[in-house]
Each structure stands twice: as C-alpha cells, then as structure tokens.
Length: 145
Image (cartoon, rainbow, N blue to C red; front, side, top):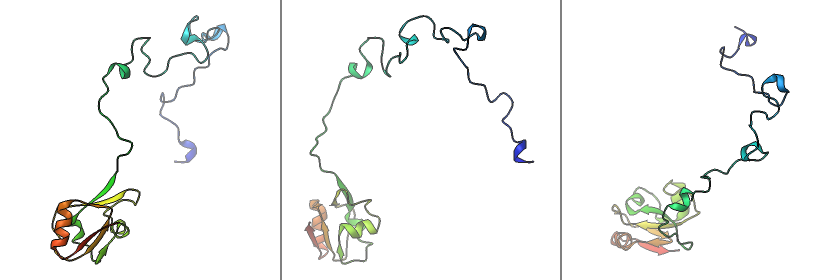
C-alpha cells in the first residue's frame, strides 16, 4: 500500500453546495434563502437565545444569591498533611514545592483536620483555631505572614 492509494470511504465526502450560479443549477436567484424576510438578508438571523420576542429564558428565571467582590480565596492545607514534611519551618514556598498547594496566587490557610506530633514553625496567612491549637500542642508555633 502506498500513500497515493489512500482515499476516503465512498459516500463519506460530499461536494459543497454552490449557490447563486444561475437558474439551471437549481440554486440560482435567491440562493436557497426564499423570498424576503429576516433570514434572506445578509447578516440576517437572530442571536442565540432569541425567542421571537417572547421574554427569553435567562430573563424569566429568578435570580438568587450574591457574590462578594471582596471575598478572600485561600489555598487550604490541613495540619495532618504537614506531618509528612521534613522541614522545621514550613512556608507557602515549601508547600508549593511539596505539591500541597497549586500556586502562590491565593493566600494559604491551615485547617485542623488530622494530627501533628513533631514541633514545626508554620508560616501562613491564616489559621483555624483548631489548627493553631494542634500546632502549639506539638510544641510548634503558628506565625501569621
């Protein structure tokens, strides 16, 4: 078999419909658009979601909730995950290097899920009360950046 022998399966490829090429073609004059009307015009047609003047669905449905533009987003790390780290001082850079957070775009918050037994100094932007308590109980310290 050579590359010149390759061909698409019979019937899988159709020629493009060429419109506006005279009356004898069957697609002349109005080029399959019918007579007049919005869809016959160049650039004619409606935008997505248009319902012929009926109130559109996105305006009929009730709007609920609220999103604050001042909301703070945190990268979350649990105390139990800090147990497996070797460092004595844990910073956001070390958490990034170890794969516990994805990037430094967001501030880091330490939560209290799990246990920690070794004394470590944890530097983060925020701590939950239970996380701070567990770190201090293990003879470590929790420092806010």
